[in-house]
Length: 165
Ligand SMILES: [Zn+2]
Image 1 (cartoon, rainbow, N blue to C red):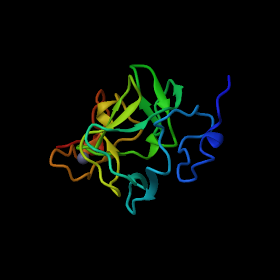
Image 2: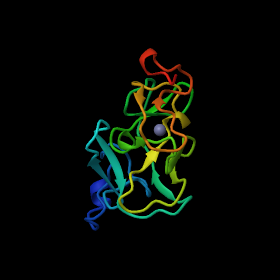
Image 3: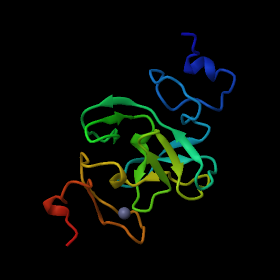
């Protein structure tokens, strides 16, 4: 093994600090602070991730990583019927949208732009694209024409107090 640490890889480029923790082996394409920033949303969503650069539709926005786990939390993305990856560094801050601008391929762990993304845009995913169940259901006010109104996993029913009635 003769791999450079994240710090060594990026020592020459102060603009691009890896967003992933140093326990995650660096790969080209992992999100950096050059392309993304966590911001306060100023509403009940708390914090979200914004793009600092433009991505064309179809472009690789970020290569993803995490720690494989068997259970669902707000920090996980489901990659198989029984496995999830724990990513409290990047995916944790991808807000849900019913009309998202990112799509995650769970077989390649790539997040690609589903449409053109401009600097300053929140990067969003549709949690229903990957998650059978989510840790907390919540009202969705994403503003999309097709907004579900209440976010829940694709294999679970809306909870009693939040069903679309
Ligand atoms: Zn919505």
